[in-house]
Amino acid sequence: MTYCIGIMLDTGLVFASDSRTHAGVDNIAKFCKMTVFEQEGDRVIVLLSSGNLAGTQTVISLLKQRNAKLGTPNLWSAESMFDIAILVSDAMRDVDRRDGKHLAASDLHFNASFILGGQITGEPPRLFRIYAQGNFIEAGLETPYLQTGETKYGKPILDRVITRSTSLNNAAKCVLVSFDSTMSSNLSVGMPIDLICYQRDSLRIQMRRRFDEEDAYFSTLGKQWTDGTRQVFSQLPNLDW
Image 1 (cartoon, rainbow, N blue to C red):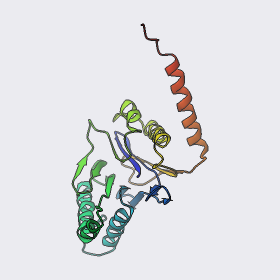
Image 2: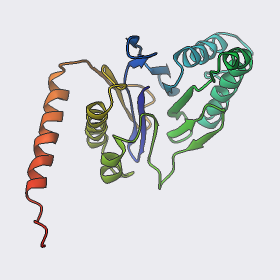
Image 3: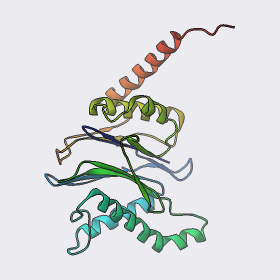
Image 4: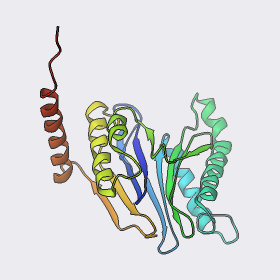
């Protein structure tokens, strides 16, 4: 399993993904699930992948291959983030057409999905959730964040904290607490965590970090969140019987 988050803010975008993959409890590995396509001054595109690892890697490789072919619609020539969402969707369906019948023969399905976000010069930042079938939704004013993978454990903190006016720094802290909560409750999500904060209209990645196990900041954040939660809980009024 995996856990990925994309957040749309007035001041930019926040992306985060874990790195744990597994095919059973005795086959656990680490793979980066964050892919960045960047042409500084023109466009920044971030893809977070979830689902079957072979499927997501094939989709990303196909997108990179098409980027290198002149005259082929690709991420570098697309005029909008909506067009890029369609290109990712088309690549997913191409892979599914090739591999789907073979997966079905083994009672498996193409279940790759993505969070896509970024900005192209001339339009505001945009954020999409692309499902395994290739259809997608876009984040809006009332839905400032999108998740994929093991979402339920980290969702409550996002719901209580994140709004479009949340600062990039506060959103980044909230995302890391969301991951800490998820990893505390689900072993299928694990370190390292990749994090990007993209500042609106900068058209380049300036804030990117990877949090490995024993990272001092992440450990401190998790401990203070746990201690603070317990302290607030102890101060709640007692029930009258």
